[in-house]
View 1 (cartoon, one colour):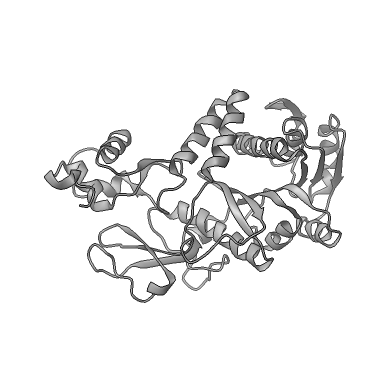
View 2 (cartoon, helix red, strand yellow):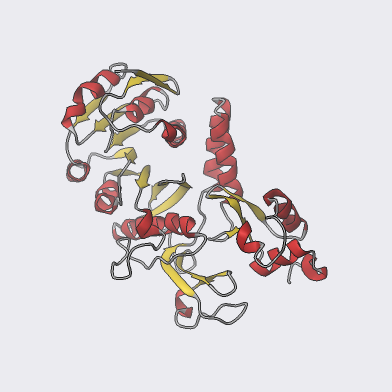
Length: 370
């Protein structure tokens, strides 16, 4: 077996599935868990789908976990996990389905500060047990690879397993993050609690979100509702529940294609990602710092984005430079930033009409109320 190095640890992969390209996702989890350890004074970690165990190893040695439970459903990986966790002092290894393990933790009131579920496909079957196995104030770090359901690409006769309607549009991957967050909010509410998004990350292949379990429910008609997309003009509109059935496009009156219900609140918590960024800076993890700065910039902006291609539709010439258009929007009084979800898109409080007007240098484009 060839050895691998990641962060401060060395490990073996053996026959486990392992993607070196996922290092940044694992780095984010390590920083988040370490920050919780700093703020709360202790850290108990449960990893439900461990593979070779590298994440459990990093939570123990880099995040400072007091105890790590490393579970991997495939017992054939026991030797490599055992070898990898030899430097850890307080840990447990098991080999059973994650859902069964989490259900037992709930039954035994064995609660954890940080639960990591790196699921393949949709993680819906594990959600109620994962939330039930968490301490209040603890964190769930969850993966979904079910892009077809989340972006509206299922065949018409198949319902979205996340309990909503997903439609195809240019901001579909942000939609995926928000549908997943909405499913978590509903599940937490059924337990009498809420969730606070720490961050929501689309990696280009998977959806990875970090949420904190809170005492009080977090969603309401303003933060949990519907998103409309106009296939005629290309713009978006947030649709409150009371406006369902009366939701023409505000720009051209055409019918809107609706997606939802989904989480419409902040995609990331600005203070949390700022604190994570400070810790990553101290560790000199530059690419993590850069990504977290992007999260902070886009955290409070509307629940969609505009692609440069959509903005430049009907305008001759090459696509505009994203940084130049963002600067124009900010100078005109709008909030605007890049989005980590799409390298050729922007998030802004301006409408698509304003973006196009600025791009065309129209005389009234500088009016914030245009």
